[in-house]
Image 1: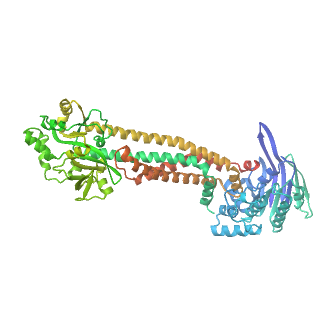
Image 2: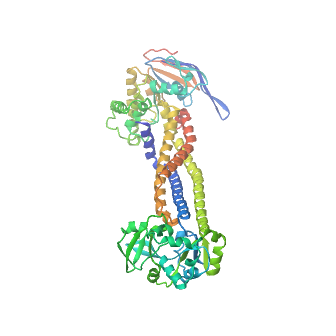
Amino acid sequence: MLRMENVSKAYAHRERLVKALDGATLHIPNGDFVSVVGPSGSGKSTLLLMLGGMLSPSAGRVLLDASSVYDLSPSERARMRREKVGFVFQTFNLVPYLSALENVQVPLFLAKVDEKSQKDRAAALLDRVGLGDRFDHKPRELSVGQQQRVALARMLANDPAIILADEPTGNLDPDTSQQIIAFLEEFNAEGKTIVMVTHDPRAAQRAKRTLRLQDGTIISLETGDNGIDAA
Amino acid sequence: MKLRTLVLREIFERKSQLLTSFLAILLGITVIVSIKNISYYSEKAVAREMDSLGANVLVLPKSSTLQDYYAADMQGDTIPEEYVTQLAMSDLAGLDNISPKLSMPIELQGKTFTLTGILPKSEFQAKAAWSGAGIFSRPIGCGAGSIGMMGSEDKKTLARKRVIETLEDNEVLVGAEVAAKLGLKDADKLDVLGKTFNVTAVLPETGTVDDSRIFAHLHVVQDLSKKGPVINAIEVVGCCQEISKGLVEKINRLLPEAKVVTITQIADAQIKINRMMSNLSLMFLVIIIFVGGASIANYMYANVFERRREIGTLMALGANSGLVLRIFLSKALILGVVGGVGGYVIGTVLAVILGPKLAGVVVLPMPMLALLAVGISVALALLASYFPARRAARLDPCATFQEV
């Protein structure tokens, strides 16, 4: 369960106060799939980073399950991310000098999993996303679609309950985008909660609910066929 | 995957960027190790010379320069052998031993050595007996007393006392290094410039250029060099009391065409060189700290900047600041250890090769310097990387995400 309680984020830009997020209140139950849409600069990424414990709010609280994320110490927050949250980025953010297999091993290494188990799990995850024959390839030796699939495998490594995706299809062609969204739907069907920032209306439609942001304010949370209520 | 994998993979991926910093630290450590190594053995040689060698006055050609006591007879200029007789016949008090030398470079089995002609004591005794005067007829107490006691010592005393009782025309004494390089032992035969000699003795190692000398009778060397009755230097064991009473000035008056110096002056020169080398080493230490440190810090800052997205990603995946700090400091540690070990190895090889040429001393590797080299190198790399690493650990991962 993710919850935002009257969350605001303001920062100074050239001596002007900019409100990236303004009084956002939101409840995302377990197993939800929410797409976040809105024009550039509307606060989508800010909202996502706050949900992931990466950006502290100026006011309000962010709760993950029962705990207030920003009342935790930085290292407790890092552990929370490691155990409960999986990030997917528009630019994949793979480590360029590591192979596909090693990239997937990174979260397992951070969770202090032994080396043998790291390799076994990473291999199984790459198999799952259809890259069983690309273990030793560096990111630059993979197509963008394949890179995003490695990123999906890496995101799944620690079996996170929550997936936060920032424009996961932003750099992909329509066919590959479909593949990635299909994977996200599959993960959602397995019970994972997904929050996905997107500019792509077709990708947004595939979510259970769509959250609209404008100028840092939530302007609507449309309930899809699954009928999950907004807080 | 381990922390080590992450660090090493990154180093090998971007090794060309690291090269400048690595070279800065490697060169700095190399120079420090070389200088320290050579000056240690040079200082040791001076101490040994002062302690164990009797000769404390040196008579040389006017034009000679004094860089090294043991190389003092290697210059091309000569003085007449007649000076030896003049000294031996003089009524100067305080002359314990007189040892004239003539040296010439020779090549044996493709290697260069020094052939040094010396005059055994039996020749002086003959001269003294013939003239009925000179150093051997002086009163016992200062000087002459010690000469009579030399007779029973074997030929190896040359290595220590620079005096030899007898030396036949067909006899040579070889330094330890010559013997090792040519595979010579006592009673072997040795051909030098067309003449066959018996190796009377292999001298014990002294750690000086004497180790690469072959000693033969002075007159034989004069014949082989075709220079006539000349010598390069006369080593004189002077009585300390007499030296303080102006023995040097007296010899100077007796031999106005020669340069007369005391070993204290020579040792002073060597001590000055050693001090200069020690100062140089300190200067290099300061340079390496500034240049090497700045180079590493600069590289690390650039590396942190270049990797900010990667750092942000690691943080998003659950890495804490401590781990990010460890990633960069581990890299610095590797840089320091490799630079230190590499600098020690190259510096030691350079010292061993250049030591005999620059300082005229045999230089051996000093394992203690490895600790110093690695210590300096690691401390420098860690210090220079600490602030960049801390910056990495404090990066705001969000800021790194918003840049594309």
